[in-house]
Image 1 (cartoon, helix red, strand yellow):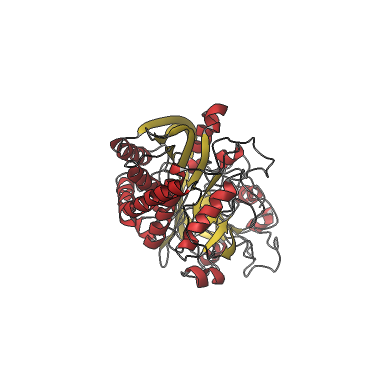
Image 2 (cartoon, rainbow, N blue to C red; image 1 turned 120 degrees about the vertical axis):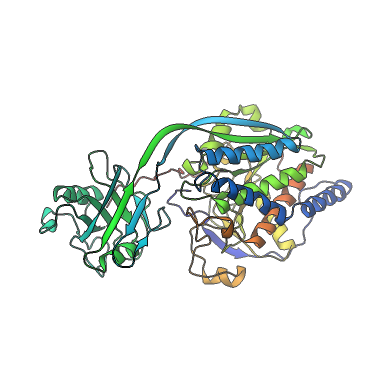
Length: 514
């Protein structure tokens, strides 16, 4: 996901000493029957079988350039794998196509130090560097020439004016690659000045003060006219490149923006009340940079295995399982699905459960903050009940859990916007684990909950088996429970309450400032 808001900002950590009950089930007889069915379902959904789906998705990525991004053969093969499994289990399966703007690259980006101890840097918004928006294509190699850097950085932001004046380029050797530091002027001014000085490429790195060390989420150049490839790096990378005079680098940027077709996979049970639909979903696509096994092969695999095991049951409510396309381009698949429903069709959906990253290697057990008590943004009525039911699951196993912000950053966003009660689980992305979280959940403080988030290393090795198994059981527990009864949640969807506007999940959030 590419959003300035952190994915799953963590709230106050809690643990509830309450026993797992039949959750929302009604009378004693129904409770006994339903609880028995849930136990059988949870036993059938093993982490081992869930991981088999992850191995299959990894194999698909391996055979398709290391990615499963929407609009490519890797995603199409993932679609076919999921659809084939669901059809074989007896579901009515619909493949829903839609068009979207694919904004990516033809050949992988390159930023490589070629002198001294050679080093290849990692592309991506949570890695070492990104291409600036509006950077043209280009492949260049040459000497990196620092331009009026302030190292170490000054105590305040915008203490560097690197590249902001033509005079900063006095003595610049034409054909070199300009190395500049973020500061008092826009990125476009810096790059335009570099072009005027004869630079063949531009690398701008973050300034270095607290809050200005990582990659900027939207380093824009502000329209056409730039003639050299231009990258933005973290402070750490820029500082490293500036450390040795005469450093040589290789740059390559080969972008593509075009309309492509991708798909949602929707599977529906043949049994159950069609006027009370229980819906579960996960996005099936990865980013272009990697195979996306945790993000979001893990959620897709968990939902898929629950669906396959539930095919052997007789739900009282109709079950619907969705595998979304183009989530990484802005929740496009789920948004397309929800907007294509009539009001009557939306009203039949009792609730939606979303699972986006359930096996982060440095995980916490996060539950979407449906009642809003941790972050101040509640979901539609009934979302609080879903949150409480997930809490009961973890408390019943003696496991800690935490609230995750209900910001609309994943595929539940379009559902809550139309008033459908929603909830789900999340084990963390780029946010660093705190000392308190490490003490409670284990793992390592000071590193991301998923160190390979949106990176080439999000492979089958980037999965925590315990988190995968526990969360798959949680999915099975609530899916099995709601298949029998949605209790107070019901299928009558109220009109959307006044809410804080959902932060757009955009491929490149707007921020043109240098």
